[in-house]
Length: 147
Image (cartoon, rainbow, N blue to C red; front, top):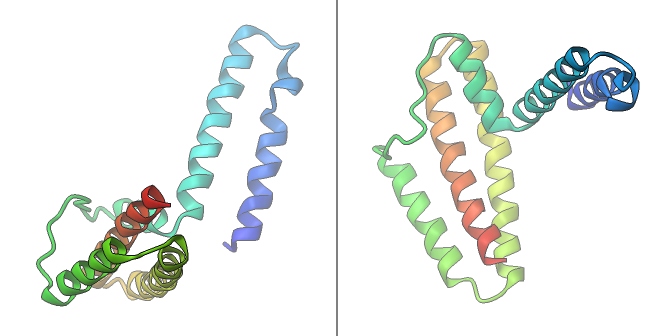
């Protein structure tokens, strides 16, 4: 499903569950609408974020995802160390934003790699993509803290 289609479905559900539409209903119905609205928001956030979506999808297939797994791939370890060093050495917000832009490109690339691996049922490659995306996300979070 395309992101714009997902956004349309999200908005449609939120309109149906909006508090103004259920204010005259019973307490139980209002609580139910609030619970469902929270679920819709959670689902939307999960599905619109490439990393969260990837983790959710492989978990549906029964594949265990260890989000705290240590890096064992020497290539990824070297890349992560270089990225963190670049973030530490960045002299201004412009340099940080440039790194952030590069991270977004890498996230998109590995999200595409995840999609290909998942379609091929190659769960080892799918997990490798998730690992990379996880570390790019963490590096991006470090940048956000510095900005």
